[in-house]
Picture: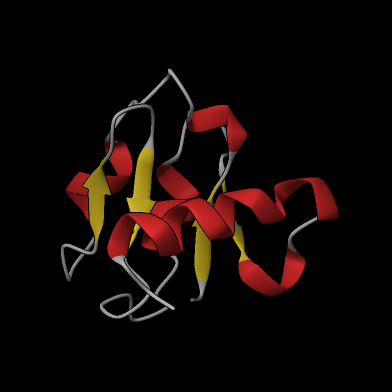
Length: 79
C-alpha cells in the first residue's frame, strides 16, 4: 500500500481525494475514507488535495498511525 488515510479524516470525510483519484481506489467507509492497496498506483494526487492532511505514505507513517493501515486492510479484506 502506497498511501494510508489517517486520523484527521475520521468524521471529516471531505472527499476531495475521491474526485482526483485517476483509478478510483478511494472508498468511503463508515467513519473515514480508505485507499485500496490493490488498486492504488502511487500517484499521490490525493495527498495534495486533502484539506486535513490525513494522507501519508506508508513508509512515512508514525507508530500512532499504524492502526489506520490495519483498518484499511481490514476494510478491503487484504491480508
